[in-house]
Length: 187
Image 1 (cartoon, rainbow, N blue to C red):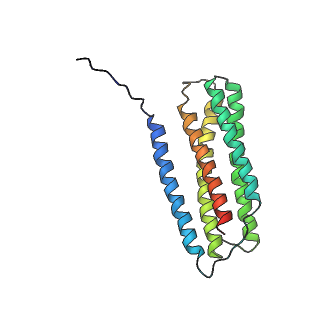
Image 2: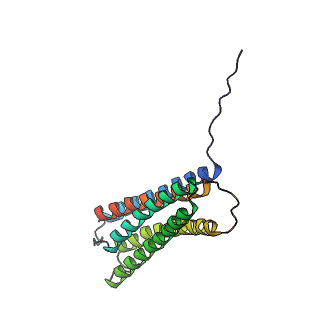
Image 3: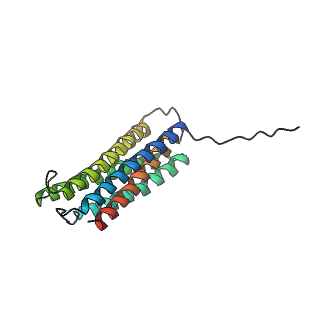
């Protein structure tokens, strides 16, 4: 009897861990948005427009998703100079996204919507703030990629770290788009 050897393509442990983390983060934001919907039905809910700068930050994070996608492509093609430029641009765009979010918080506070103000404003601070922390975690990963890209001695050309960073970056991008649409519609 001939036994056929079937080889399974296994997922890299870092990628597996990332998918578990993204599932957990997704569940957390589902909980946040569910609580938002429940609280919104209460009589003391104050509806207000999101700061317009949140839309600018959306353009920045969308652009950064493109730059990290191109960075990964350049890395795999061993075009390290272009990879360095694109990973640097992605990190800069990530920081710019966080700065825009912070400016949006300042605009809310200046218009009387403080963290300890109306419940609706508190939800925005928590939901957007927690997302911003996840983006900053991604920026840290990008800065590590940046540091590795510019070191003089390269130990390995494994694409796994940049693939993990890119997957996470696309995840926080899609998450932000969901949150922005949700918060715009469910006012």
